Structures are given as structure tokens and as C-alpha cells.
Image 1 (cartoon, rainbow, N blue to C red):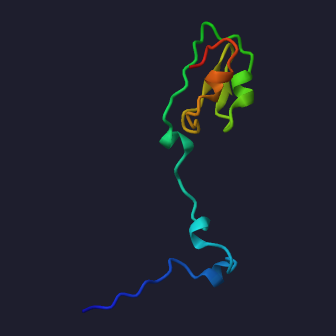
Image 2 (cartoon, rainbow, N blue to C red; image 1 turned 30 degrees about the vertical axis):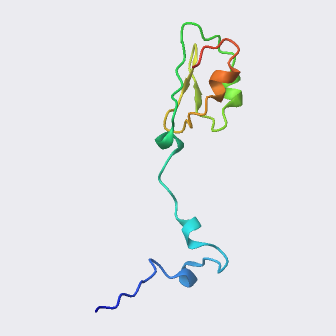
Image 3 (cartoon, rainbow, N blue to C red; image 1 turned 45 degrees about the vertical axis):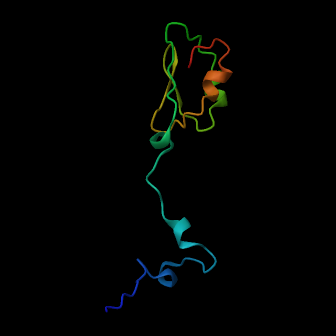
Length: 93
């Protein structure tokens, strides 16, 4: 029977991490909101009046401005659908 001993990845005291801070919370996750998105926004570019309501209401600010329309950064989009619900022209879906 072998004994296994777990070792921390780094010394918390040497790293200056406070004792009351959970070490799991200090690990940065590379996962972006777009990695778990359930819906994908689509803009009807011919009908977009560029009112910026989608940009205003987006909780993660993934709406990007172009010359004649707004588009979405799918890496950061959560897929919440707020932009489609708030669009007065219903041009994003």
C-alpha cells in the first residue's frame, strides 16, 4: 500500500496570498462567456437603423460598432437575448 501526499502547486505564504482567501478563487479561468452561450445574436444589417439600444443594454458589452450597423463579439457574448428583446426594430434576433 502506497501513501500519497498532496503538495500545493505553490506556497501560499510565499505568494502573499491572505489566509482567508480561498485558493480556488485565485485561479484565473480561461473560459469566456461565449464558450457556454446557448443563443447566438444575428443582425439584419440591411434593416439596422443603428439606434444603439443593443449596445446600451448588453450586459457584457459585446456589441461592436461598424460604419452602418452594430455587430456582436461572439467570444464574449453570453447569448442572453437581451439585445433581441430590447431592439425597437427587432433587427437582432
